[in-house]
Image 1 (cartoon, helix red, strand yellow):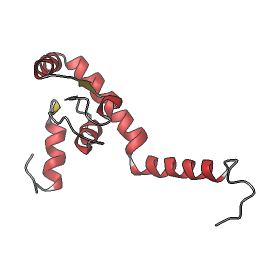
Image 2: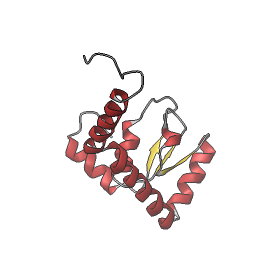
Image 3: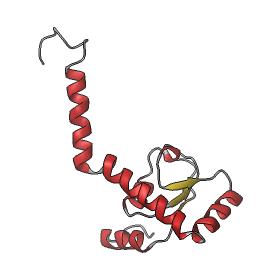
Amino acid sequence: MVDGAPRGHVVAAYLEATLFLSGSMIEAFPLVILEAMGSGVPFVAYPAGNIADLPGGLIVRSGPEMVEAVSYLLNSKAARDELGLAGRKEQRRRYEWDSIVDQYESLYQELLNSPSRRGKANL
């Protein structure tokens, strides 16, 4: 991708992609992986940040493993489709704004109803 590309071009690139490769070894929560998941594109990545906890891709630990994973996915449409669907489902379930709002609301309700809050004056 090119820095500063219009958002529509970025989305179009994800939608046309067969695979998304992430060579980053240092991340916290990589939005590029979330974008791939939302586009139904399987990913191959190193286990940086929380990537290993996200469905929809294969985790590798070396360059040769990445080559092997890419080769496997390029030669298996069924595996690509399965991973892409798993990633898309999780992205929709947990990372769409409506879902995020619901998760925050549930958390706030849980905290407000926790035993440590009972009996304390409302703020």
